[in-house]
Amino acid sequence: MFAVATFSLWLLDRPGPWYRWKVACLSGLTAAGLGLALSQVITHFYERARPFDAHPHDTLLLLSPSHEPSFPSDHAIAAFAIACSVAFVSRRVGAFFLAGATMIGIGRILVGLHYPGDIAGGALIGLIAAGLVFWFSDGRITGLVGLASRVTDPVVRPGWRALDRAKAARRRAGRSA
Image 1 (tube, rainbow, N blue to C red):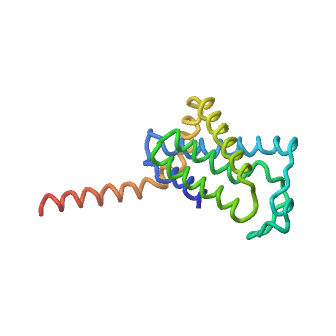
Image 2 (cartoon, rainbow, N blue to C red):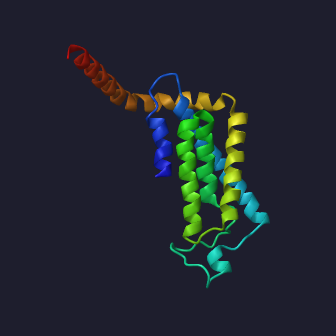
């Protein structure tokens, strides 16, 4: 659902030269990719067993096991990179994404796949990746969004026009009543 919400930012952004949500979407996905690349580097230097491997008698595993290193949590990295990128664009919408990322992290702990430190480390890496993308992109993301929008805008434009017509009809109906 988190991935669907992220891609929805792109599709729900009104066609035109203002790319606020499309920038948030592409920045978030780019930050997630950067964060996951950083995670691969970290796991080569630091390998931590997952809770169900380290404490087999103390952990009730509720999902199928993964035997990749526990630290950092890739799910937390991706979720927090996206959430922080969205928060850089809009605090209000970012708060919802941050709440979702937090729920993903807590869920990973509750099902026995990660320690709290794995989630905190993933959140920090996600924040750093989002900050790096935000800081270094400096207009490059907007240029890429503009190019990609040439493909997606014609697809979503009819829906936005229908929505605008429906709003106008409701306004006219409200005035005549």
